Length: 523
Image 1 (cartoon, rainbow, N blue to C red):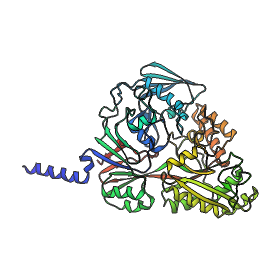
Image 2 (cartoon, rainbow, N blue to C red):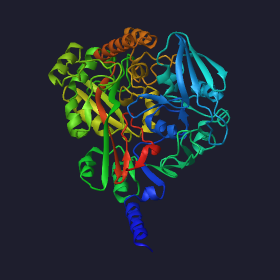
Image 3 (cartoon, rainbow, N blue to C red):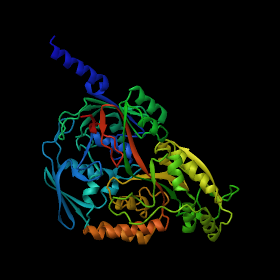
Image 4 (cartoon, helix red, strand yellow):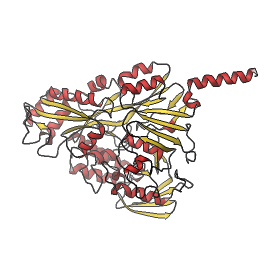
């Protein structure tokens, strides 16, 4: 064997020892949140969406900073105030070899309304009054009024096969029977609570991914996820635990990737019912009236929360205190609207003004396996509320149980997050605080059933305003109104984190998505 050939063999061997996953064209990724279903129209939750968007596809993509990019639609334009036209990509095949056409778009736009799901894809489709198929690769969507948000809505809805999913149930998607997409990966196996196995779609219109096979391991507990990374059992993880961040950052075999999230952690308070199920006096007896209906009480709760302490002690610096629905840099952020100052004495005065000088009792609910340090956040808030006289119990539940109960409005105060995948304020406004309206798809995640007609009117105007400057002003006014009325209580924005074995790179995303096709060997 020549010296040159021996040298090349040695280099290859060294590269493979550093990057075994790449050499084997396989990669295993540790996900930090439960994936409850592969039905892309069942539950509008980030973990489900992140996986579904790799198997299926959307008309419009979001890049790592949420800017809109062509997807299954090569181009789009407003023909007039109430008509949007989308030019579809030709030559795209579903995983079963069938052609993607406008008929699949029509089917996908209709399905969320007829699917009895726990959350919220009709928010993207309720504005559409008519779907017009001009030809197999041109579709026009009509609205009752001007609707500038149509492209951002189409970046939130997954397109499925009308042929494969015509009579499919959610169980058919979870079994793989109906999981036929146009995305970069084909489903080979889904084991709930354990893993999702994917094979590369070599015919993907966006080009081949660098891996032939992908295993997405569902490791929702932090220590096992870190252990798997350090042992090399997985090559990349998301949601780096705050307690391990500093240690991993100094590990020469690990690379960390971070970016501020568009995800706001916040509290929903029951501001609707006269009597609320988990509000009591301090002795635990039910109250005849619900104090959370009073904006002064909601403001007192906000003032009682030391956001800086949560960021520094609970999140260990991997968060930013929140004062509104989105961090700086997004469309509709209100300049100068800062987080509520920590003011426990002011909180006590507000409680006294509202008729609760001695406080009251409250149970605060939250998940224990979804957001970064979610149960610890709830515990910290409970301790802070107790110091101003609101005796607060905590009940933390697995996310699947928690969401099901919260959607039934079983709680009085509940922790929730919201990632603004559309990069503009209309999305959280209409999802989280708009008056609940099933027909409009508004308030689908408004667990407190907060209602403010003035805010609703501003939001409706904003959604129907084509002029960008005017629309942003309306959304800012709506945001300021609801924040100053304490329709929800912002806590903080997460910092998104990923950690990879040396030799791999990942572009961090503000929307938290972990896409296998975007994990690549280092240059």
